[in-house]
Length: 123
Image (cartoon, rainbow, N blue to C red; front, side, top):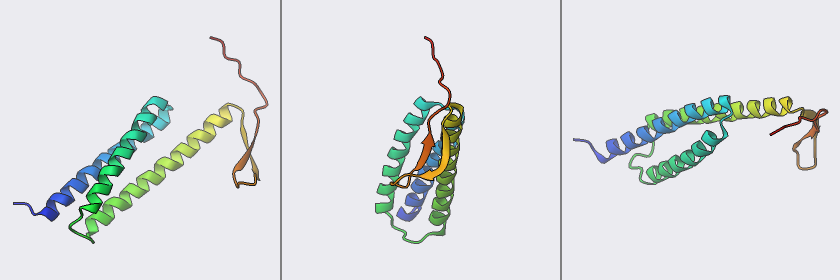
């Protein structure tokens, strides 16, 4: 017989594992530059985040090491995905001829120089 705390932990583990699988799939989509898949995964991650928030609000256990470990792993994977997305963005911008300058504008955003060459697309 499972207790409410055990059921809650199991639900949290399932949601966490689904989110980790989604992060892994997102990394594959970033690597393939699959915009449609990335859009779907963004919506799916939002749905999972809402479910995690509901699970958090229904938490019968306040301080469980398993929960801390799960969220530490999720944070690490989210950070890895953000880094990968940044690198992919810079690579695509470089291929298109945009170069990041070593300067910042007034809003503290990196400035870029326009491409020196123009790509012609024929359809």
